[in-house]
Image (tube, rainbow, N blue to C red):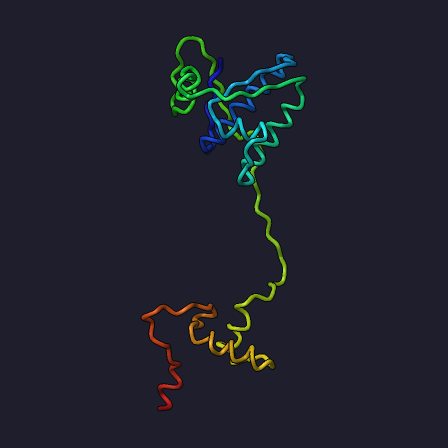
Length: 189
């Protein structure tokens, strides 16, 4: 048995995957070829066994990392254990989640500084904005630009009555919001 304390933010599902990944790594270091692994996380067990799909890029990375490690074994069977029958694992998990982990007896403690998966990076895409339904509406309200098509122009004028441009941003009017008038128009009256 081993207790691992994470020095990074991890959701419950992340922690379940981290425990599985660390267990697989230890088994590989020991030279194990055939392995039966038990977990009380129904979600992780079913995702690894192919019964559930992953949602989100982080979970997908954890699943790929786990499957890559499983591929190094001759045979791996992952089973779900009811939480009621998994009290030893729960006790270890509680020890690992404490800030100041107090060890009972001779259970080794490892501190994991970073997740087993790479950090997800957001990419910035420099691409010209595509034509959306808002652009002709914005152009009409802001500059009075109308299309040549009479049907589309009529529809645009009708639709524009429900929107307003403020500080170069298009907003939809609320039910009780009065129509805004231009200051120049008021001064001319």
